[in-house]
Image (tube, rainbow, N blue to C red; front, side, top):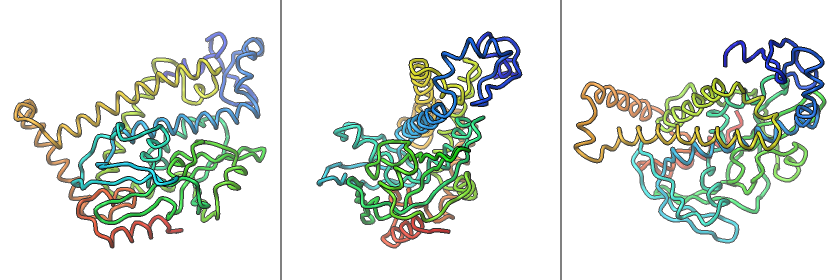
Length: 361
């Protein structure tokens, strides 16, 4: 988006320098334009508008994360079944650094799919989607924190059975986002809640804490988990970061093409918001699918023809880059979310995963 678009009146398109005093996002050239635009703008302005923005932000953030997660899935699922309210996922061995197709055909419902995609990925959205969430809340003046909580026993949960053991999502602490307004209202954004049977991506903090939280373990400054992960080099995180970078590039292109920002998108009338959000999601999914296809093609060339189609010079650069990633990966202790994916994992590694997930430091 260029400087002209940023400083344009949302009503007439002329040069503008005055923000709406309530939301501090929409700009106008004068009071007349603001008055004319009020029937549209009132839907997302003021107290009710901030509530709408936060709920939409939570849902769009979850949609983007799940799209990335599905495309860049990192384990092979052999089978899925339900025992009561527990979703049991049987993993098959997979080599380190390999991706797997997410088995939609094994999922009996959208509920099962979301539970499988979010299992043991509590911290990932805070790492991968941090910058996108910042864009969504631009100009709102909202305070954002990261919370580590112990959850109450939940009706639904996921049990993973892998070559190195089995464990359940409810055995671990959970990481969520808290958003607070200057007037004292607060919301919880929980992108990976489905693994606990929490399917609302956003709800008032008081409701969430009463219903789902046994104990608030720690409050972190927003961005803490992203900073911690950036200090490490994990292969799957590199792949996920690469996929999310493609989504961020798609958002940047969408902003330039439409003259919108994520902050203004979240304030549009519902029919317009739904249409533009769908278009943005479609473009993001295509970008991630292309990225993942390239990664898989490089790591697992299927035919000699495919190998011959890659210039030797480019192929060597790619091989060198992947070798560095694997070396970095081997030098680090696996993170809890991907440890179960490694063929060489041991039962002792599973113990490390639980200790790391429950660490309060």
